[in-house]
Image: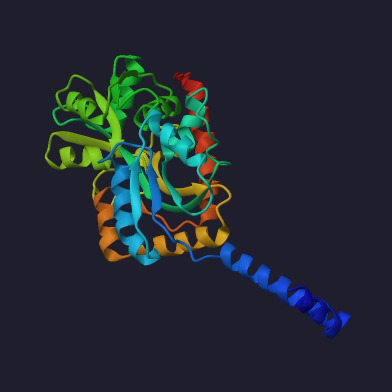
Length: 340
């Protein structure tokens, strides 16, 4: 070995030695670069759903994952981590490595409302995540029992003006989007309702149908079947345009009631990744997900869930999210809603 070293030293000129060193260095750097840019994905992807199985966020996660996994050449595993209106699972996702192997299903609750509702949620809805796609928006419908004497939204507001706090409004729980929708309606129309919180939409809407509670605001996914069966009457919808599935139901904004001209409440579902995830990965996820969400089969499924599809870019989603955070922060402050 020593003889070979002496041979190289005496037979290679300084220029040749320099070139040899550069070649070896470039080779090592090349191998390092290849390691750094290994094909993505090269292992299963974890799709964290911060709500129980069977809910809207879970349904959408499975709808996308079953189609996105094969396109990316991997398996996408759904992982339900429910708690605190989506905050528990979202905090877990915020601490995950930003390497493209953690996806998060975010909602108006987890990524707009909770930051103003809970003293500490363990993540920043804007800074901790980068948006990928917005599945769509889902307005709420104001419903009363089919035999209610309240025939229109004007009837409801007039009754509330004559008898403050007499009319009761149900919700799926304190601080939920249904609760905040009720508070926003009262604030904008200058009336007061008595809020009746339940543990979930199902028991709440049952009491509305039976007449034990006067009204409720909930998504068409929940209220729609009961409207179609004739057990509930819809007085208005919280989008600025009427729903395709319920064209006969007027928007709350078009009611002509003072203060409600711009009333809009949208529940929404989005896909996020931890901040720091490489932009090429975000772009690929966005592009492939949008292709899937725009197929006729998936579009029909979204509309069946009462969701109005969206084509926002990641940058537009971020701006929309900021507006939603500010909007609900104001409502929560005005209604003095506090949760531990």
